[in-house]
Length: 190
Image (cartoon, rainbow, N blue to C red; front, top):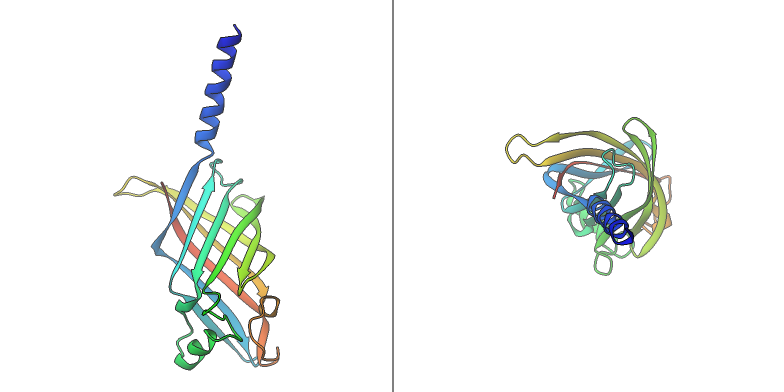
């Protein structure tokens, strides 16, 4: 009888462990990652991360236990203005010679309502890591019509203070302290 109970317990643990390993990879052709900062209090300047990646690991169907990991290559940021883009690479800005990547790894997720979550995690820019809380929306799930793979769509946004990460020496009246980060994309279950 003890052997049977041990076998049943082991089987249940194996099934639970297998279920906990649902991994979703970003479909880069259906994703964007951007930031917006205000200039002189008069206009908004948008930046685009041209190279980034993300992975989600979750065991729950509603993603209520999801772990998000994101990386972005800061050397590929563009604001559609060559001089500004070149300046973003310099030591006083992103310092991409020493810190070429932005990194985020979630540490907690809280379901607020339906498909709305608060996603908390550690954001690293320029070698500085700070906790941030972002608004996350599960846009939906589907099965891809051709590949038959499971998909999930998310969008996330939040505000960070650039000087917390040592980005930019200019006063806030020239370039705002607050930077809005946004990302959206489709993820494919592996």
